[in-house]
Amino acid sequence: MSLFRRFLPPLAGVIGIAWLVATGPTTLWAQEGEGPTMISVRLVDVRSDSLAEWQAAAADISAAFAAAGQPFFHVYERLRGPNLPAFSVITLDAEFNDVPPVEIDASVIDRILRSQNDSELLVLAMDPAVGVPSVSVATSGEFMSVRVRTVAPSNRQAYYDWQLNELTPAARAGGVTDLRSGRVVLGGNSDTFVRFYFGDSVQTAPAGGGNLAEALGQAEFQHLIENEADLILTDEMYVYRYREDLSYTADE
Image 1 (tube, rainbow, N blue to C red):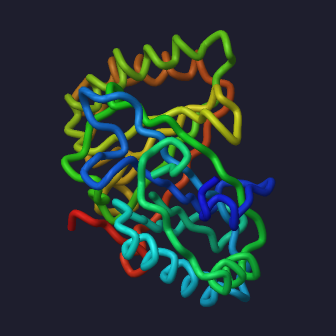
Image 2: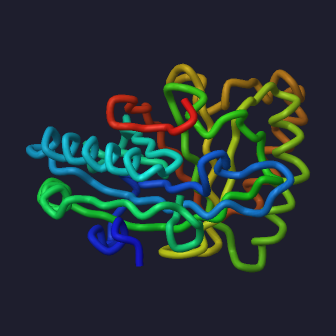
């Protein structure tokens, strides 16, 4: 078991902070022509009276990942919704990827645990065939929107096909430059799909920097949305801001 996972055990919680871990120094979350990338997603709610302590400890963990030669450690702060302050951090899952071990001082772990209310660990399989691959593992915009969709088990393949055959071509046509898609495989409902869009403002983040309605025409865009709605049971969206001061990327 990785040190990071062992010292930060999963607890019941809601989406707040995501620790995402990717697969190797030059590998993206999901690279076209390759198999799925397994990432860890740590979801944490931070105590409002301990925000400074948590951020300082997160910065220390980021530095430890950098010192170990890990590919990246990305922290995002959630902007809206309940249980704020909350954050999202992106890194590789050490259980599924050959990555260097990270040594984190026990006192840093104690500070993290003291300053958080709740924590949940998910593992996602990021699919390189779905979405629009980024040119870099680094974040491609200051803001990130996360769309979470849960389907019935009988609709899992149909929803994947919708993403592959309808959403992905529409995203490319609409000018989306960075759309990453995955499915929960450990720690949650395995019929949950998660999509990450990036943009330079809160307004553009949900659209991933593109305009699908304009590219497809209103009628075709509406048809795309309706086809998705027919397949899903639940849908949620979260908007985050990239925290460069708490993050690290090896290839920058």
